[in-house]
Image (tube, rainbow, N blue to C red):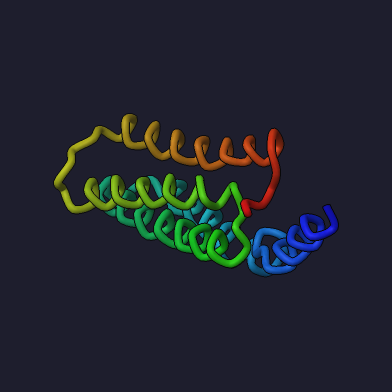
Length: 130
């Protein structure tokens, strides 16, 4: 039992999601940039998708690196979700997939909701995987 508590304490010390500066760098800044870009009315749809692809890739990288550092359950789930979002947005930006603006916005919203829902397993089970 004491070993388990020490392991969780060690993992928490490595967790970027518990450090304000890294939260801003990996997740806060991309969300702010995405919200600002969404407010630009004349941005072409493919350019908007390109911005989303870069921001999702940035946040996915933060999650995947954090999962590797501290084994955070949320990051094991949200990292791949955000990476799939980056791939989808990249395909739209490249013109490989043609989604209407409403469909693309719905897809972006769904990806963000899934990333938020990835906190649920931590509430039910535990925050850090073994």
